[in-house]
Length: 180
Image (cartoon, rainbow, N blue to C red; front, top):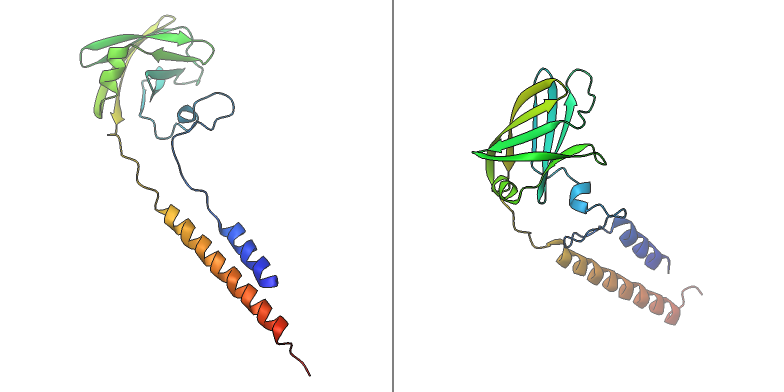
């Protein structure tokens, strides 16, 4: 019976999680794509006065702007973005501290795969500045098939085989007692 416990312990400790679907597993209502934003297209740029970070998330471009020297957020400024002749005005969202560009035509052009040169015009307090940056959007990649799934079945088969061997060994010992 000890061997069966060892086998169960081995598989419990070496099991892996398997990737599946695009379900939203967030707990606070924030979409998982926003919570894990490392793969989202970004633009980063700065001038002597300001620094800007923008991220394409779904159907909007979210832009955060800080003063370069103090890292103090620029609140309630006026932001305009230009892409190949298309212009859109950012709306400041005080609850997030960012500027959002959600113009459908602009976002559709920006979401196309490739490198997109952007020109941001910022007016804040008594300062106006132009910031230029490039946002690169990678082509969509098809999901690969899960190659670990057959491995899980192989592991389950191995576990079943080892359990049968352990059971056969136990029966053999009970029918052929050792000793005198």
